Length: 192
Ligand SMILES: Cc1cc2nc3c(=O)[nH]c(=O)nc-3n(C[C@H](O)[C@H](O)[C@H](O)COP(=O)(O)O)c2cc1C
Image (cartoon, rainbow, N blue to C red):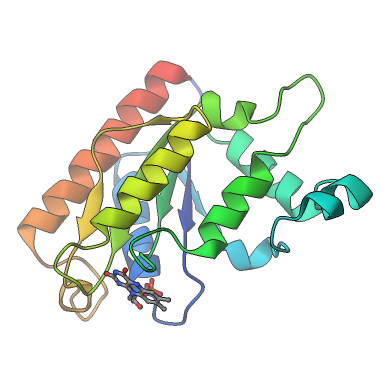
């Protein structure tokens, strides 16, 4: 049986990003579970803000097509994103918007969202840990008809949550991460 492949997408490009650290912690958990995991950087898929005229004139940008194909090559996707003004950052929303416009041959638009499960997580220094962003992201992915697994992780007071090796240090956070990863693996196996 071929190994399960999971794609991890951090929603921040910032040096020292709290969400990039959480994405790295998730990668460690996935590796421990014998999953083939790739963590990409959205910085490698630079995209203009979605513009219908641009799409009509030039088609969907190649980086959106490539990002969609990266997602297609995996059995599940984990998005780890900051919360901006109670919602998701433009980097993440714009990537989802463009990917939803990709139509590869023998596929319908947005098929990539419907055929694999998505997990969502956020890290923030606030008490809510990006919960409102996760609500918004769940809504956006659901509009794309994605299966978004119920378990999620909103890491509050995130700058205090990591040790000097950037590992999560609180048992409750580790357990929440493990529960989310386990559920993502289970659902990805079922949808494989
Ligand atoms: C434009 C902007 C809006 C923000 N809004 C929120 C917010 O609504 N809730 C929150 O918890 N943090 C908010 N923050 C703080 C971010 O959570 C914090 O900067 C976080 O470290 C960003 O994620 P990163 O470390 O992965 O880059 C905001 C930051 C910016 C730049």
